[in-house]
Amino acid sequence: IISTLSWGLGYFGVPQVLLRFMAIRKEEQLKQSRRIATVWCVISLFSAVSIGLIGRALLPAEPSLATSSGAENVFVMLSQTLLPPVLAGVIMAGILAATISSSDSYLLIAASAFSKNIYEGIMKKNQADDKVVMRVSRIVLLLIALIGMVIAWDEDSVIFSIVSFAWAGFGATFGPVMLFSLFWKRINRAGAIAGMLSGGIMVFVWNLVLSPLGGIFSIYELFPAFIISSIVIVVVSLATKAPSREIIAEFDRVAAGK
Image (cartoon, rainbow, N blue to C red; front, top):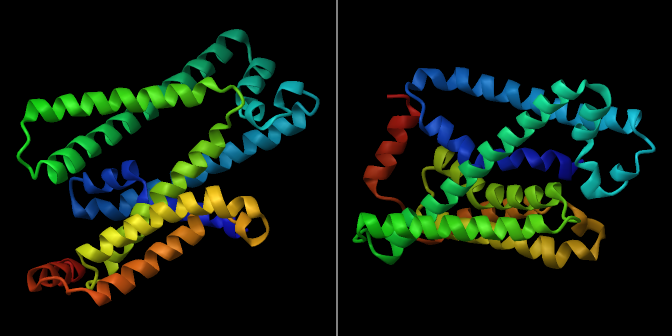
């Protein structure tokens, strides 16, 4: 139960979700956007679970669905079994379109984050030439795409496991920082960096080292990593210099809705 519920923590740190709210035109639209996003998540997640249950009921003896990797094709199998060929083809095209749309978004986010934030912001101290930054972004995008192709080449790889691991990484790395930045004025730069590092590292440690031990360690890695990151943020922020008066004043102004 805890593992299932902890999936919700991932939404606080997923870049594409946060960017939608950050790019909103007017603050007055935030409440409406929040309601729409929540309702859509409920509908989409309920539909995904329902498809799995229906597939299990209608195709209980299908051998291709017996493995974890094969079970991910249940929607395709249902479409081929229950729908006319033309309509099934439209469904397949929709799946492919959604896959391409999501893939290019993730590729662009990752490449832009590395080229702008790490290469230009940290390595070059904002002194890099725009053409060089663009070249670095394209190289990183190509490398990430190649890594994805290598992973996809394994026909026994389970997409759900990969997505689950990535979801935990996003949620534990960025989720606590976002929440503390919004609701706690004492968080500072050192606490934010320490929280992101500890959350990301704990996801790897829990998944690769502790989870195979079983028992209580079989819990979804996002939950303990999220807690560790939150604790580290508080401890490091309190142990280091407080934010400047300007930052605190800005926090109070936003909190007051001015």
